[in-house]
Image (cartoon, rainbow, N blue to C red; front, side, top):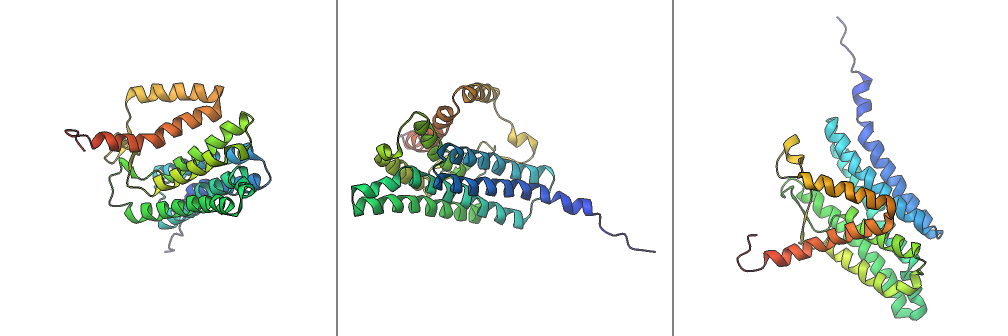
Length: 253
């Protein structure tokens, strides 16, 4: 009696989430190339495409039951490129590089701010991986790197589309880059929109949130860059605001 050989179809399923991760990695790499060539809008859009693919790879892995340690590590390395290096180099080439015209010290502040962003993204990812099995899934501790990248890239996309030169916004860009970087490694809690349990019921959301998504999609079709800046800017602010609210006397934690 011959022993049946394993079906190759089962092995091929594991390619699905990793293909999405590879697509996100490609988008992040393309963003770096585009920003170095002055293709600002292309670089910004590539980061958002990477964010969409990054969200899909984990969902596909759960739906097909193909999660693996390899996939987790590969996803983190892809995130570091797409949401760490790509936004840092984008903001540097678009705006922070011009600080060197203000003197040697200002020039150093420009590339150091870009490095701070990339380093904080790496630290944020490392902390997330080390705490993934112990933290409440309803919350992110610190601003997630895809959301941080979305804030930076939507800011650049918006003002570039309005005709602003990055050199004219070097100080606001420097401040934004540093603030977003520090939010990533902060202890500020952000809602993850994942619910608190396990199974299909844990991913249910209120009806009004779906209405909000429809409105956001309409606004996105009308003015994508400004809509994304508003959405992710408000999300980035929501953590510190809710932290201050929780600190008020009599407010439950």
